[in-house]
Length: 325
Image 1 (spheres, rainbow, N blue to C red):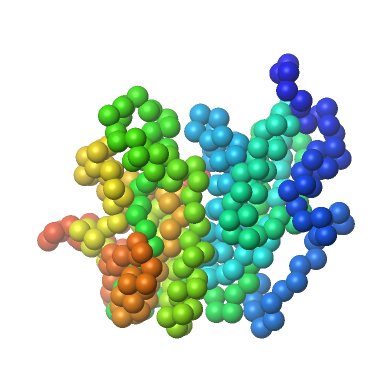
Image 2: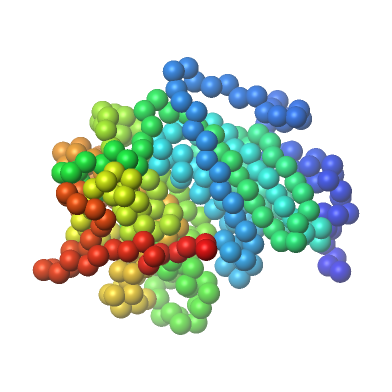
């Protein structure tokens, strides 16, 4: 048995008392949280589940990073809907032998991400399980939601940043010895992209200030190509990406060849950027106001999505990306 205290030694109530210090004291303690809500706004609710061995592992993710990523994934979904975060709840399923220090480190990572985006943790649940499972529900508010189904022919396709960095970071953690000569700063940037992604809530204010009223969008957590395909499918249109405009992260070409780099960029996933379809003039203004926003394609008549590589068009297929089942 490990010399570290395990959660079965604390018991459920003892563990809850330890975790309540991560929550606002004036909200926690009853059967449910009571939240104030901005007038004339809609409630946005999203949930996400992370499973040990599927979404994180000791080899690639410290508990602090697992906590950060769990929160970031949910806040990214709120950002994709154009919603400001209000609060989150966390439900944990844990083996009884889980070390208390691991759970507290997990919540420390959650708290660090939540503090950055001024979002409180207002409750949740704990129970026993054969493996660690983190289930988060996030609540947000929005006046004009961003939906996937509002892309129109003639729209530009814009993204908020480079793609492929998170996948590169994961590969570095899994097989670090393969890229010993990689620039240390690039290495750190890629690992940080995997372990500590930033939800693009910073984009909400510029979109309001520019008066962008119609756009379609979603986040790219399952891959850039997956997001483009889903937007096209939901809107009944065709997306055409320009191969020479794809947002390649600096240094990716030092790790892999151009074909592999493009595959990671399109299908790597977990970059947590936003993919938006909006009028070309609005996209151009947004790219001038927000650093890193780039226009990578357009919406045309038809169905599905294609990638233009010189004179050749390559069809993008949904089954190329990650699928749980």
